[in-house]
Image (tube, rainbow, N blue to C red):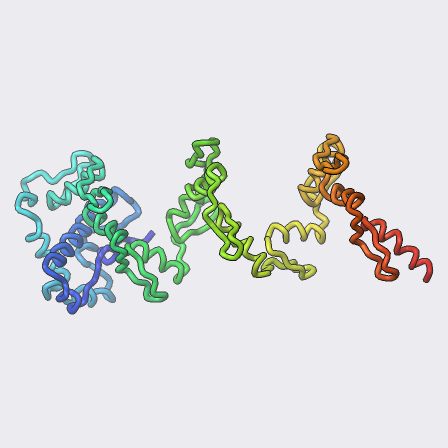
Length: 382
């Protein structure tokens, strides 16, 4: 797990950019940066034990390659070290400062702090107090820097930019996650199966595969899911919501993946290819079914007679032999059939349709097997 240092929560300004800031903006910047420092110190070993945060790291005891950056001019032409030392002494109101004899201990975890503001910020973790409120939406936060980050949602500001692709982000942590796409870093590893992940949220969801935990439950049918996104998709079954629309034919879908599959009808794209015969398919599911022709796999078995089938639909039709079910009825004569294809063939009796034509003599037939029987006449003539 990567250690968290001040550079992970700092926002850098050039000297020219700093001079362009108004005095209130400079004061807000100082407050946010100081609170970041105090919060890093206050959560050491408590909120995330894997964070190796130490006072020396926050005091800019950095690697040699980074010293030049942090010793360059900071706000008001001070070095960053001078700025933080000075600010820690001057920016904290007198009533918030503590002397060495005054209690600086958190009663719940016996943790000590240099400033009362740091203690107060840390205690909000336990009390749940959120004194910082967004004036636009009313959401509250326990720390001022959290409010500052939230307000970027309303302003649309995204100050953190990826140097490789130019994509921008509201939070520095979001940029750090994004950069793993370019670096390929996957620091979170599942100890049970060895699979690795670039984000801790994806890692947490994956672990439920092993534990069987499904914390997200549908209020209507009580079906449970391992992640909230799966529940959201499922709930569209009950609501009938289909938010994904095909721009070409206006057909709508409940899932984006279904829309992507549908759009291949318009584009003609068949991205799934059988390596044995070269035949291509729009859907991966269709490729899987097709490959059973080559493997002769028949995974669907009739429990009554033991006959096996390559497709579940064929098994369903076969089982009607045992049940006697005939769900397909001819509208003209009310005759019933066990499968739709038999009904289609029967209806040609009424319509007179004969779609199968002999290429040698031009005679037509209503059924394919009748054409096959007829073609033997020509074979025997040869």
